[in-house]
Amino acid sequence: MGEFDLIQRYFQRPATRSPLGVGDDCALLAPAPGMQLAVSSDMLVEGRHFLSTVDPARLGHKALAVNLSDLAACGAKPLAFTLALALPGVDEGWLEGFSRGLFALADQHGCELVGGDTTRGPLNLCITVFGEVPAGAALLRSGARAGDELWTSGTLGDARLALENFRGTLSLPGPLFERARARMEQPAPRVALGQALRGIASAAADVSDGLAGDLGHILRASRVGATLDVDAAMHCIAAVADGSAAAAGLERDTLRAMAISGGDDYELVFTAPASARAAVEQAGRDSATPVTRIGRIDAESGLRFVDAAGAPVAQRFGSFDHFA
Image (cartoon, rainbow, N blue to C red; front, side, top):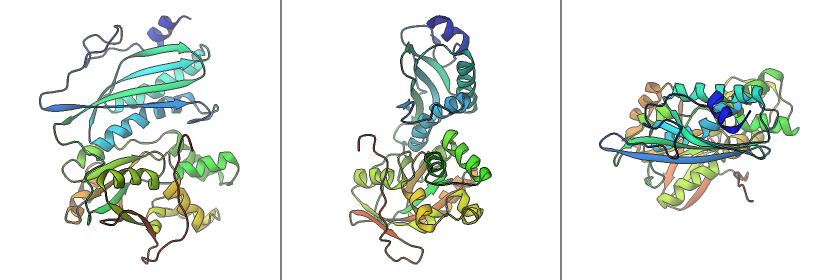
């Protein structure tokens, strides 16, 4: 099977947002009047971002999900995406599964494939996604202010639990491992929540490299600091909430580290004025996404960790760095 046969069979679909479809040198996109384009690219490399044993349908889902998560953090509505795909060879079973998982999530969010590239090489996936947001309404990292409350969506740390099980540093019971693995391989981008938070949240970022690190991007861009309740964050782990972590004998410090430093969660960390607390909670209900208050923004720079009683926590927390 040649390159263009491969594209025709697995990736050729009608596209309404680009008048050229996927068959020309460039895709043409135009945002609606009064809207701005939001654009983001993410690359997934085998052995670095995913295991060779991952189900191809789940990999197709995740390849797009990590990009949609960036749109969510901006408060943007997905429009379209391009796919650059390096393959070691033509494996039709793999391609069928990958494209099925990719398009299932794309259809869920009304996001069309409008172009890209394929080549032979080590397995590498690069997606560029396009969204639209009302002019001046995008959520940015730079809007947090002292006195704002600090929030996160969904669950944190479950993906890292699965990774540590794969590495052999933890041994999770079967049902807990499978649930954590699903969180690692099929994250749910919080697109609806991001749009619901426009005009409410003061700053936002998605949690890809770990809560501490991604919150740090907000703090630096906003020139503020924060106090983070590590126990509130720990209780965002699904396995903690339902008691299965305790049943598995997972220690408190391990769970804290999973939540604060874990990464691969693709949840949102965001800030909002204390006066907007009810509006944040309503945005969570409107988007069917749990939201949890985990701290506050301070005028003093730096990130401070406290427990549920407000006492300082000496445990050190980091985040993922591709080049560290």
